[in-house]
Length: 173
Image 1 (tube, rainbow, N blue to C red):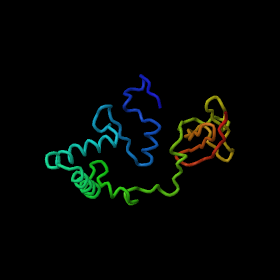
Image 2: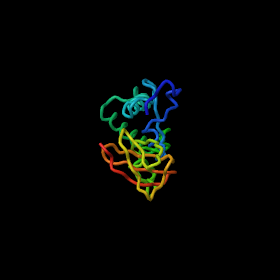
Image 3: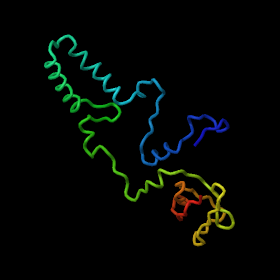
Image 4: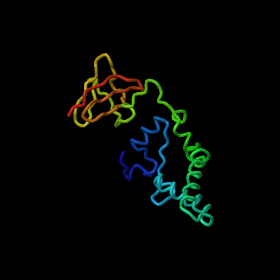
């Protein structure tokens, strides 16, 4: 979705990707450039190592072998005992499948990761999209009702009414 001045605050507009993530129960975290949370994962771990490990051993290490040994022990501590504030788990525990939530049964990702639009069905039980007329099956009488279109450009349009699937139509080019 694009922001237009007449629509109000641009930060209150929900984008297509944000809507898809919300439907999956995944929060979209956005940050301003230069803000610490906007840094990439690798830069954050390097900063963490510098702040924690390097400061601990700066004055006490005299040989490279000693430094390597201490760093391996520190990495072991980090992987098994450090709890990340965002994920609330240790790096090692993130490898286990129990941390990830499986998708619900029957969830069609095609209906989440698509463009969505609303159309009103006219008196001929059809609607238009991008200048093309789409005729609904006569068994699905939706005259003068609003339908939600799940659009897969160049492939198909899936039609829903009151969150219930109605039918799938080929996309007209």
